[in-house]
Every structure is written in structure tokens, then in C-alpha cells.
Length: 339
Ligand SMILES: N[C@@H](CCC(=O)N[C@@H](CS)C(=O)NCC(=O)O)C(=O)O
Image (cartoon, rainbow, N blue to C red; front, side, top):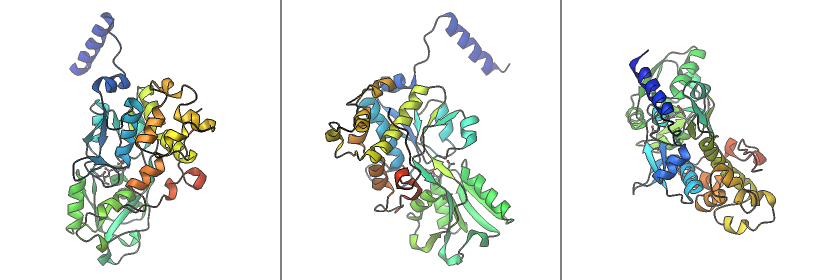
């Protein structure tokens, strides 16, 4: 037995013999600390990005603020840990963060090998490619022999390799740990292609010396369902993050938003009453107060508000709702009911 395993076994036995109490749950740890610790990117406009005063903004940031509103009734009770793609899962597994909310794709091995639970999908994405207009290429299939800039520790690296191989094309992968390095390398002409999630391309194009000199090709080469992640082994915390996300989507569907939530608490619609806690014990069954979702919606907003504020058509990213529309509008956003 490796010495580290022996140590863990001895520590566990000592704990058992001493009748030691169970380790604290994530909710207890979070409450004791007084804030949620949320892992985010190192800066990606629209998703998790510090503003000029250093305050974090974005769709992924607001998900964590919503969890803080659900737990503490205070959306500001959250601190952010910027993480590279490579560092993010270790930070979650080790307990350094309570939630990873960082343009992270739900894949099978992240569930099975890394022991993680995705609490939902807050942005359905796909991988794309950006190229300088000057290349005068209209399809990725014309890019045989290209050099490709991307991030290490991502699904992106794997998908681009599949794409070139299945199309019988050669390529040179130029991978960096930090997104800033990828942006700088591509912008300086080191690569013909910048590949990442299409939402990421929309954000990073704005950082180029001349954004208009680049285009995103039409091909979508993968499925990238992005969402918040927790560790396996704490179903209560998993439920809290999952239902925070669901509450924001259900609120949009029910027409409840930050401006009308307080008034909607008095609605006759039973689905709205259950969501807002004026009927039932749905919050206390999560380990929270019954106004958990009222706090999320009044302090952060519903999914539509968060989407439009951070990544929607009126933001610099200009991302149409597309597949991220509610199921009732032909999209994929569908939350189970509060029932
Ligand atoms: N969704 C992919 C890619 C995630 C990723 O790390 N993308 C880069 C490129 S957009 C990024 O987040 N950069 C921002 C940063 O590292 O701060 C995954 O989960 O592996």
C-alpha cells in the first residue's frame, strides 16, 4: 500500500474509533464561511469577466450569485476564484471551490473519471473556428495543413484533432494554458485558426487588434453543453445548484422576473406560488428558506434577464437565443417543475 493510502486509512480508522462526527456538508461549510466560493474563468466576456472595478460579471457569475441568493438571501455573498481550464477540476475536487461555473462542457468522462456532477446546462454551445478574413476561406474543409491555436485541458483540443483526422487533413496544434496566450498568439498571426466554443469565439474576437478582420466559419464541429459543476457525494448541494438553475428557467417560463417577483408572490397561479415559496415547503426541503427562489429572481433575475444582460443580442457578444431559447419557444431550455 502506498504511504498516502495507509495514512488515509489510519486517519479514517482513528475517526471511526473516536466516534468522530461526519464531515461537514457543503451547505454547512458554505454557511459557516459566510459565502459561496465559485470557480470561474480567468476572464471571458459575457460568461465570467471582471469589470473595470474588478467586480465579476457574466452568465456563469450570475449563476453563482443566484446560489448565494438562495443560500444566504444575499446575492453578494459569493467570492470568485479565477481558474484556467487545466486547473478547474482539481480546484473543485480538492474543496477549494464549492461550484465550478466556468464555460465547462458536460462530458461522460467528467462524470465518470473525475467524479463530478453537472447541475444542468446554462448555455448550449458547439465548437467553432475563427480565421482571418484575409485567408479567403469559406469552409473549414479548405484548411488542410493549418496551424490551430487553442487551450490545453479542454474538449476543444480533442474535438479539433477528431475533425482534422476524420476529414483526412493535417494540422499543427499550438496549445496554451491561458486564454490570454491563445488570443495573443492568434492575433499576432502565429496560427491560421483560433478554435474554441462559439460563444468563446464571439467573446475573444472582440479582443483582437481588428475584430472585423476575422470571421467565424459556419461549421459547428461538436456539442458543448456548458454548465455548473459540483463534486459527487453531496446530493443536497447538487440539488441546491441544480434547482437554482431550474428556478431561473422556470421563472422565465412563468413570466416572473426581477421587477415583478415580489408582486407575483401574491399570484393565484399555483406554479408561481410554489416557485416563489408562498405555497409549500420546497425551500426547506432543500435545506434553505422557502423564499429561496424569490431571492434568486428578485436579486439576480430569471434566465432571460441573465442571458440578455450578459451575452444576448444587445451585448457586445450579440448571441441570439437560438437553441438556448425556452423549449416552449423551440429551444432546449426546459426545467423540471417545482412540484
Ligand atoms: N468548454 C470547453 C472549453 C473551455 C475553455 O477553457 N475555453 C477557453 C477558451 S474560450 C476559456 O475558457 N478561456 C477563458 C479562460 O481560460 O479564462 C471545455 O469545457 O473544455
